Length: 384
Ligand SMILES: [Zn+2]
Image 1 (cartoon, rainbow, N blue to C red):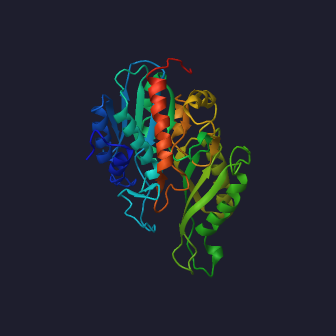
Image 2: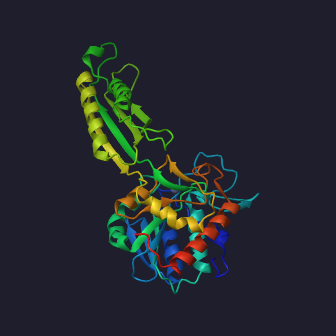
Image 3: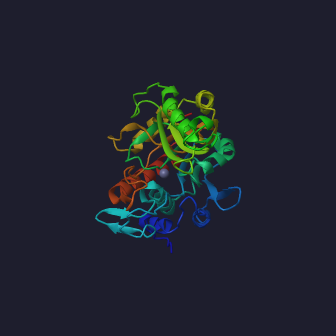
């Protein structure tokens, strides 16, 4: 039960208790956030997925003017199965200066802090609008955020910048790589294994594809990232029926993480050319399906955002490039400059006994309070 005296720990306890693993509905959590925010003067709008089992939420408060800020986070969390948890993942536990539970770092801790700040601050006289954006299915391909592009595009001229509270160990991430996920289907011709000349092995074709493709992908380097160039990983392979049958089918799930400026279409051309070459050599049909593409975050525009944020931050905050992907590139595509900056730790995200430190939460709470109170309540300077 959330009372008017609730602090961020109470909100976090409440949010953690919603099982929002990406294969579950997030509607109970969205309903909770919407009714809480409406009770504090926000107007809200839900944007559902195709089968109405999940929703994004956009909440806004303040005048219908430009110069607003947007705070964004995903509501879903990663699975807990087969992880050695020592606590119950959906019950918040406080222990030795940290708060433990699935989503504490990634990224319900951030959402709990927003609720706390909304509860504590008087937002009735804002000079700039504040937008809160909560999405579904970030962890499985940013599908929720992609659904919001049209709605956010219409709001973009009212938003100076967005802040995504993903776990960044308290550093400002102003650029990150993208992610392209693929499933490649190989279809050959079965035969008795003693007569390889009568068949075409789908598995051997997959092996050829795996060997050639990383060589053909762009080698360009950007020293801000570690590793500096696009990465490649084949994460799952399934093929064949028996030791003594030439495999007819093989399925390969793989991903690459392009530099921020690289486009899906140019990567697809490389994949198609490689598939064609291997197919020609092996007589195996190869079909590549791009499962999802999440754009990277480019640092252009973000220098201005950092300048605006600096007065509200401790001096030692580093500005970094991240190897992981977030929804920031999607928001940037609709002209909302976006920075990723959160209280959680990346090392804790997706781990058993995931936690966030109380010190980081309180530090971030002070930052959020000052930002909203000063930037949106008092100052009228604009960055655009
Ligand atoms: Zn996350």
